[in-house]
Amino acid sequence: IIFKMATAEPYVLFRDRPEWKDVVPIPQDDGPNPACPINYTEEFRDAMDYFRAVAKKEEYSERAFELVCEALLLSPANYSIWHYRRKLVEHLKKDLLEELRYTTEMITENPKNYQVWYHRRAIVEQLQDPQYELEFTRAILVGDSKNYHAWQHRQWAMEKYSLFTNALQYVDELLGLFGDVRNNSAWNHRFFVITKTTGFTAEVTASEVEWTLKSIRLVPNNESAFNYLRGIVQASKLPFSQFPQIASTLVALSQEPSPSPHLLAAMVDILQAELSGGETKDATVTRQHGRDLCDTLARVVDPIRAAYWAFRRTAFV
Image (tube, rainbow, N blue to C red; front, side):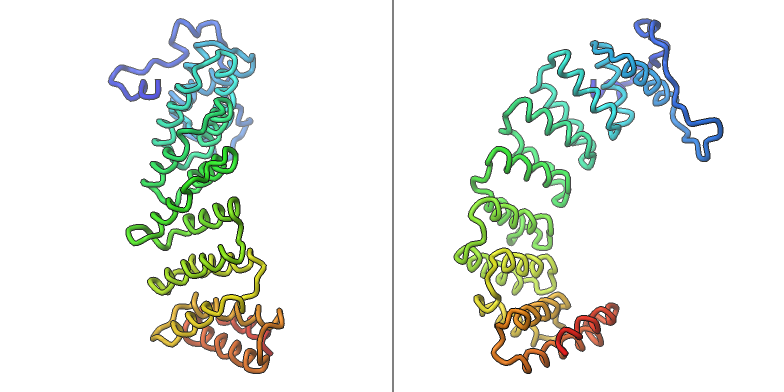
């Protein structure tokens, strides 16, 4: 049914189909004077008029299921149609694996359609079988490695069904030599996996700090890596001074020509954290260093946000 409307056969409106003669369609009510009426196609208007009629009388039949299939081809993001489809699947006792295959086709055609992703989740929950979800989301992410819906679905399946085996290996591939080290979604997923498994213990955090610094050395202008570095130290609830390699690496990189604004911003954050936590050996030197960094950012490296860095400078007065 998913490809029925794409065939060479002439499309027959529902109002012209003998099996629908007993149904009175319900037209869309835009009021007497719509400000900006939408110029719907005749096929869309016809299908939606009959869908409203079927939904109103709560008809759960094979013809209603066919109607819903065709309506979703015309309006794949319509939440009401997806909701009604779930009711039909339940009442008609449809094959859930076949329904899962249907969502695979629909998501492949509409990968950023939230409604179909939600429908797939509902079917997986009914099946109580997530065996296809990691491979399926992996395939979708090949086409768009930052697809929010695919990442959300993957994390939902992993957490609900404890699918964390070799989870970091996949992230390593995405952020590795042949991946995209700037993929913020993959960095986020790495944080999610560790949070839901080992947690950021001192040992895990130290390992992640080294892993992240290695990435920063390779691509110093990658904001995602710096955000991850801040996040893991904060999640560990350990002071930055526990990881002296962070400061030494960032200071060394800051001496290179045209330092990254993300690098200097991370240094500002660390210095401020040291001051507020009483971790610094010499508060006067730390404050001066913080003021100098903010001045460099405001005047040279990141002048478009000069006012912001002037504000951040006040923390080191």
